[in-house]
Image 1 (cartoon, one colour):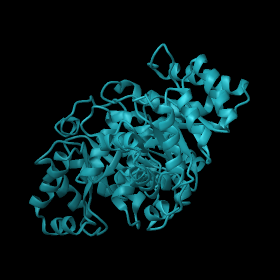
Image 2 (tube, each protein chain N blue to C red):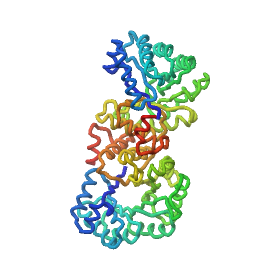
Image 3 (tube, chains in turn yellow, purple):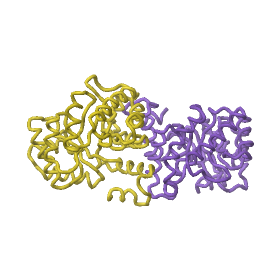
Image 4 (cartoon, each protein chain N blue to C red):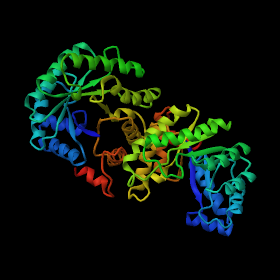
Length: 262
Length: 262
């Protein structure tokens, strides 16, 4: 599975302070810790303080690419903030994210094409969060057909079924798992699937247990990528073991170490 | 998921000794420990020493039903040993197991009918272990059609895809997961699926991690039952959490305790 580290986010106090104080050591250590734990890419968000978001995003990208050339996932609800990162990023970018709304798609799909970036499309629109699988598939179809019409390769598209907390949307969990499978039915096998894993346990008491259990269930349903905390060792151990069971990682007694050193 | 405790097996040294010495305290404690940990039924095997297997099986059933009326899973390759348990058992029985061979089916299906027992059918025959999903489905179809012709209700049939160790049959794991889903396609939704979980990690170093990861992946594929060690708390926590995600267990902060006290 493609692991996107979630920890460089201004909403976390240590990162928010580091962005404010332009303390690049904190950011670079957080980047390297996640990569050493198995992250394939890093999500980068300035958080909710938007005063200096354009310059903050460019600064984050610059300090992180001093220490790694892993792909960066530029995470903002503001296309201008994302473009501020895209302008300075030398490695591959993933834009996080567009919704299924045409005003979002019309801005973000051309932006992704312009910078040769991948794109996460979340199955949500201004009407709100989908309440079942059919609504998720309908929104996915909207995103997919917009991308196809715009000549944006579906290989570069990640569909996100919008993962809800199990303690508020328990009846939707199976629909979300099935959506992960069925996105590939409607869009073909080249489209990727992704979830923001920690959403599933928001407000729950057993957060880490719920995160890792859902992750492995989603892998069994074909999930390609997840935005998560790679420093959660139990989570990573289970994700790596699921890769082993899915025959994506060759068995040896030291398969956990072998994966992390890949 | 329907949890079948695996620990009352003469192959384990403590149980083998207890059977030999007719020490019922050891057996009864092992039964109650598993039930208190969440087991819905108990697998009962005398082990490989067959000298006194008929009387041993009857003794085991009798001492266990002194302390519980949970269903017992009578586990032997010898139909006479199974019948020795069936004769004295007062609660519901599950016969473990028939293969897809007609000489087994012709004995065990009538035996299950005679004693109103459920039956585990393993997709294996004298030609050996199936090497892919199609072979598993073919053997499942043989078992299902024999049961249908014999008037044995498919609701009382558990199909077992024969779980192989990941370190020797890694390429078959995905076929096994898909077989769990597809057994219900060929036999209808009323048929149950079961695995002997600990097989998946035989000979591997990370046994418990592999067991619990596979269990949760199989639950995502619709697995109904597993024979496993319910005293493995991490395993049970994840199985219960998967039940929560599948909306089979209502969310509350204390859902783990609530499940065990059910």
